[in-house]
Length: 155
Image 1 (cartoon, one colour):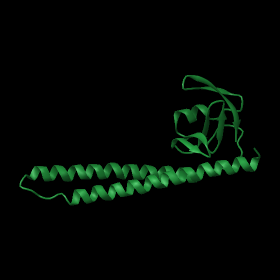
Image 2 (cartoon, rainbow, N blue to C red):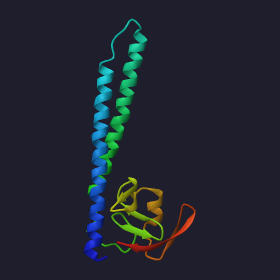
Image 3 (tube, rainbow, N blue to C red):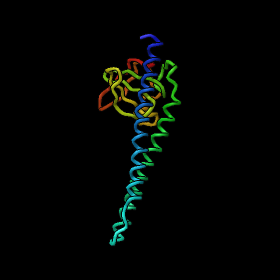
């Protein structure tokens, strides 16, 4: 793979991550709106406690989705700042780390994704595994899923 192909693939991973997070943001916004609407439409009944409980539950649900929305917005902001135009020689934010059994992209915590028929683990730079990987080089090894894993390529 040439340097340009490496950069193009990392850019593709970043765009796929941005799309995933954007979808999550849309879902969270919709959930916030639905929870607010449900809380607002709770009818006052002769059983006043039921009404108050229903409204409180609706507000709690709205708050939960609002927190998810804020977290996704922060994650998207961090991902957009990741530089994929550099070919790295050590594991760091923006690097793709290919190992004997797995590949890791340190950019955003999106878990296991399949891009171009390749399984890639998207790691947040704050994730414990990313911290283990930081500053490792080709041929270095680390423990992943109780297996000694060797880094074959970093870019």
